[in-house]
Image (cartoon, each protein chain N blue to C red):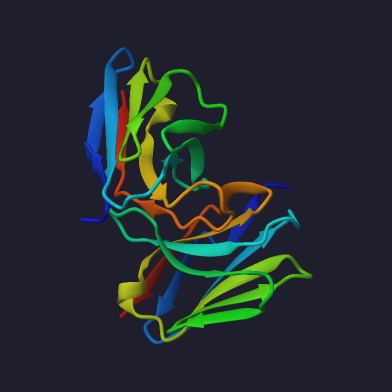
Length: 112
Length: 115
């Protein structure tokens, strides 16, 4: 119940393409869903986050889509660039538990 | 460098050694965390300190011993580790521990190899 399942494990996208990473959760008490971006040799950094009261949040080329009934959320990277190559982690937490539960990560490679 | 600094960046130790990882944050945050990052696994929360008090210990083996002398510094003392403990150990901080929407600021990590 505390797991967040993330797919795919790795993703190769051509420059200018759309990268899509999916996550699913079971715990309906989760009410905060962030995405973290990690470059090689660096720690993860918050990229974008969403609450379940909205179905979509956009920040520049990055969009979170949220489907509360399906208990799924996804990260879309529009016009993917080589500089977006990194590992992306989805996560979830709830007011009942302050712990951030992370997915297993997706290694994204954007080819020039 | 980010607001969270970890040293050393790389550490190789034998199973009988004793070593320590250090973390320092310059963000004025009140909560500090240790996470373990292993390939193809979710980030694993190990310990949480809030206002220098340990609030979480996720069933971590006693060969890992945390210490938080103040809100800016966090240590992870290591002794008699096993090869499966080889991983990237990440320190993070957040404003506090009480909100469900904690924004974590991570350090770059300490890469530990246990021989």
